[in-house]
Image (cartoon, rainbow, N blue to C red; front, side, top):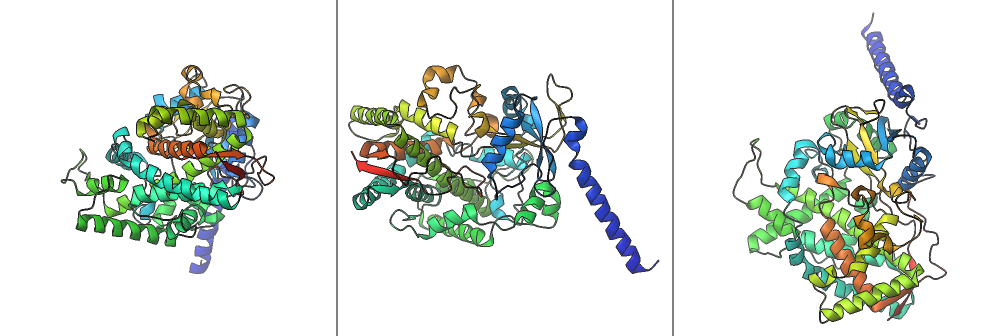
Amino acid sequence: MGVGIWLLTVVIALIGYFFLRLRRNMQHWQNLGIPCEEPSLMLGTMTGLRTKRGFSEVWMEYYNKFRGTGPFAGFYWFQRPAAFILEPFLVKLILMKDFNNFTDRGFYSNAEDDPLSGQLFLLDGHKWRSMRGKLSSTFTSGKMKYMFPTVVNICNEFIQVFGDMVSKSSIVEVKELLARFTTDVIGSCAFGIECSSLKDPEAEFRIMGRKSLTDQRHGNLGIALLNSFPNFSRRIHMKMTAEHIEKFFMRIVKETVDYREKNNVRRNDFMDQLIDLKNKPLMKSETGESMNLTIEEISAQAFVFFAAGFETSSTTMGFALYELARAEDVQNRLRKECNEVLARHNGDLSYECIKDMKYLDQVISETLRLYTVLPILNRQCLEDYVVPGYPNYVIKKGMPVLIPAGAMHRDERYYPEPNRFNPDNFDEERVKNRDSVEWLPFGEGPRNCIGMRFGQMQARIGLSMLIKNFKFSVCDQTPIPIKYNKESFLIASESGIFLKVERV
């Protein structure tokens, strides 16, 4: 047999093996008799993704179709069988009681070739535990107090810019303005840089912020490969971050760190804390690993703080204003609280003042229920897991686990009239009587959102000052109902949010 024929035979055999294995994977749940939809070869159970429907629609439709059929439904995360969780008791086991078997998110990361992918959100296993330990002190209430005046100063500028917009036109597109506000906040606290996007919509940081959420390094085939075969993708040194995004944020962080170290500059912000972790006396963990951060690790954490922080908070505030504009009674009640609390604190918007605005918290919590920015929580099973009380329901080692938080938030079993905006869902008594896993915008358990306090702080500051100074109502250009962006993994409106705005 010639060499050419032998090689061709090997190639055909490998292709045949690959397709047989793929076919077996794509029949996993059907063979076990677990309810599921028939998958497509490329996208698994997510047929029509980013063309006919967005991520949030996929999760919502699947949840509504299979809820009540068992503790989870079968799902196909691209070419991988996955467990789509349907019941709160199993959510609680995964996120809390049996967390040690579900510590990983299972997303692709490759810090050696792609430094910005070495971020806390994407890390798994020992690397995640180590980084979480290093960063655990960076978002305490004490650290929030240090950063509070910075956020307030930027908010004062924001209110001035917002007022200038209202003077020119009573119809204001709030989505982009809010994103410029949070870009300046996160840019200042994470990088110590005056981004100036409030003054200049085309400021470099605002442009790169938009691109960090939209620009992909790969098309659908590359994304499917990264998600379906992460170990193989790492072996062939695949990167996920777009090259221009990586170069920009790596440069900004290096320049910021160099300037602060050479000039002994301190701002009591997130970047200062990362630099402290880089420069503290050399310490090693029990495994012999250095506890100090490298410049690449600093860049990755600053990047995720920026990319996640500005978008999630601005989106939440945008949807809150949208709902408040449609519910005048709720808006008036909130404005009354803001004015009364500020009066008790002599007009000073302090950290303690914001904490006293209880109804504001209810409004934000209800907004996050209806518009859960991260509508799915991802985990990966580390060892075979038999669901207690359901011996036929087994989550296999290495299998992705999907918890549809956004869909659960709109389940009438947990929230009466689930599609109605009702901040009273979060009054003290109802919260006390509700299981914590029935509200999951920040996750739950040891792997909840580390930046939750900061995100809530900037949303409280921004909304309280907007409601104190302006009245919002709907207009002919207000999108009713809201349509979601099909491209985004996060919840985001398809178009701008136009509202009628008047000074109070």
